[in-house]
Length: 253
Image 1: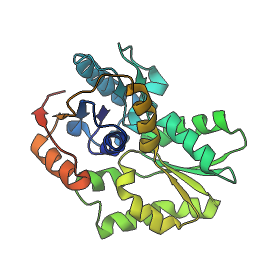
Image 2 (image 1 turned 90 degrees about the vertical axis):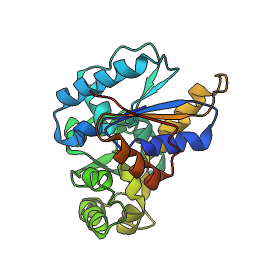
Image 3 (image 1 turned 180 degrees about the vertical axis):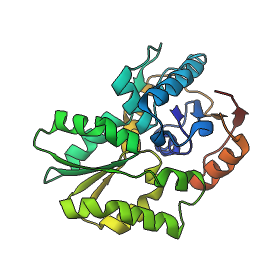
């Protein structure tokens, strides 16, 4: 599993809630976070290096738990790998189309993901009549990565980002960056109970669980490789999601 930082923990936690008898290696590229400020070409370059690193472990499945990396691979081609690769975009689009009654769907993600149009294309492939409102929210990933997910700053940044969805009358909003479900309480407060929040991490975890269900049980370990400050990442990861850290290693990328 790979992400730029803490965001992919939403996928990891969702997957762990569905199956425990698997080993997970999670690569957090915190040395280069946030991805949303980088070009898609640069994000694809980083993503392919991480895929190569993780494939050395001969995984049964590789989860790209980063919306921006999915957008970069969609634009430039998914890397060749000796295992199935799944991302979060198609799963999120499918869940949003199923949840929306009106076809008015919002997408909030990093600037790079929004600019790529990857979610909008996936939605329109499933629902031609959908009206998509896109919002880039570059302030949110740094808030999560710095540990400020419960702060007034986080609340205000989310509220500011949600105005366009209210004006457009969206009844479903995709949290199109895996960091954003960590702010779900603020999104719910800003959008109200009539708007369905779509977490692509949950849909991705369901697909991954089905693919992994036929494997022999594994010892249920969580190993983390971090390109930046490994100890800081582990501390934030445990505080944010309660994830158990069985192994931790700094890896230069």
